[in-house]
Image (cartoon, rainbow, N blue to C red; front, side, top):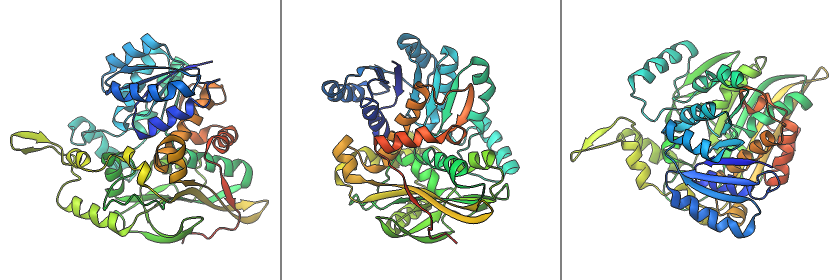
Length: 419
């Protein structure tokens, strides 16, 4: 039925590809492309005996638009799934536009070099005008909206879990549960234990940038920014237990604020253990989270990239991670003139994920929604020219697909609220 080009072959991409191969009647052909072709070949060899999907592989530098264009023209896919790094979103979008192909990704654009003068000027202007200083935001990709509209192509942004499923939860709540929504709290709890003193559950460079940035939330249509990790709450998560969580800036707050302008407050919280925070603060204090190159023994290195090379590969955490994740959204608002609260969430078991696809739950909870979003696009349920985030589409078939393919929803109609 369709040909799909997947760019990336890391932990999340591996999960998404394996889940695509479980739906061979839709994903009839896949090309896995990465800078390191041997990783693509190994995954293709593993999957060939157990799927009807025809799998091929290719080598590509996703930073190079011309290489991407050549690959897309050669393979002629119906959809490009970008499961590489957020740094590469714009080059892949450019290539899709040049070739007339629909596009999707799992995380919004941020630059690799945050000292680039041209990017820095735009960034500082945005900080002043919008009121938040995180390096990642949707403006760069939203700027492509007219280009995709004029080309008759769809670009789906941020179709992982958060962002992604959390936005579908919001759309579902607005459609089925509320007449008006007053507050949204997005809670991301990882109750897993991998046994290392310090490791990150997804790309260390992206993860550490995200959690070390100032926190921010949206209130009455405006950003409120606070020092990193300065707002802490405790919450008792279903099947995980009591955990400390901290307010972070997160990309879906920006799009939800735009698409649900009547909501009075939108916040995002993520759980962290004390050991993780102690390590991160120490690394930040000594400059290891810096993106500014330094000279070491005659070689130029970027400290955070060097740190990434030292830390465990997130894809290697699967066999040693035990416990569960719990990610969802708590809403307050009104229905039929009466106050209402509602909590929709998913609980995912690290060990069950490893049994199925050889990954820990963090990769699983991002890779499965990527497949389900692609499924929505390829079956014509989520297609309209332009650039969109998940909450701008009908949430029902997407959540039904998540229920079916490994991330079933749970609901609580009298949840404890976050103060």
